[in-house]
Image: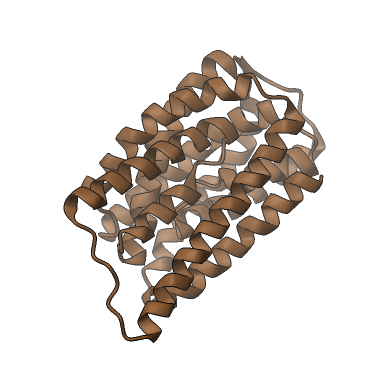
Length: 265
């Protein structure tokens, strides 16, 4: 369902928020829904069902602009991205149905729990790799079948998360791509491609069961496109591969903070 809400002065903050989310989304390989949802629901009191659907719509331009920017910089693995996306489409169709049966409070609690669990998985994986390197052990190399099966599993999970919570499903995507030992810059670009397909699928399903507020979407997108354009350009000038472990830990910490906020408030 599509609607147009009346203009409110609080909406003037949305282009600024969109810019920050668009920049961070394209810079870190996420669509930005992970930030949009807490902002819209907690700071502006927008109902979760409306925030989820509107967040998905506002995420699409970030994915398109960001993925294209990463593609030009050769930071994108098309084959792995399509495997993730194919499984994600199935998961997104399922997740959209789940949303329609959950209350606003339950959605926020579930989102918080999901955030914390994924953060724990990412932390444990990073800790295991660090211990292996410290002991002089070689990291396990996945076979092609193992790599593709893991991609499918995490892709499906990301699709479910995308449609259920409107968060772009970035966390399982990043966890899956990092789990197959993909270089970090490729992870970020490929993640945006997967997020794009997941978001398209979830948004299509939410046309039937969700409530998309195009007024909110327009204000968010007006800033997010600019931010998404700048993200890949800045990333190309930074050597981040050596700091991959620290980046994963900080990302996990951020997810825990967001998760706790959603559960408590």
